[in-house]
Image: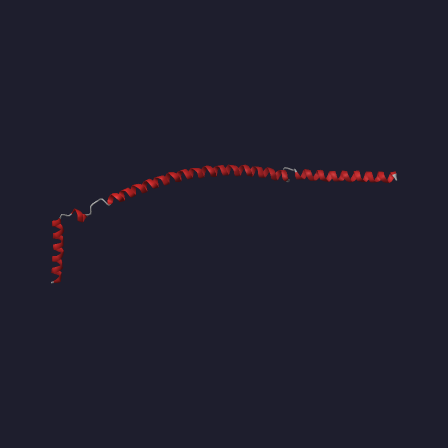
Length: 121
């Protein structure tokens, strides 16, 4: 009986050794920097750094564009205000008929009547 217990103990130790060997090899492959998860983590880390730089570049570019757009909007609003002021002052400008004296108005009317009467003949 002691011999049987010793054989089982040796077989269990041998099985545990094989299990540890297989686990060690898998762990080495898992943490391998070229092919395993370690390599994937390294590649992802580089990609995160690149994306961070690209994000910062995009952020600075968009901020510059926003500032330029605000300046252009301000210029457009100022121009619109000036145009409104000019249009408002045009209402105060007299027309050509307002500038004609009464005599020239009546002459113009008479001429048109004469033209009409000569055409009717």
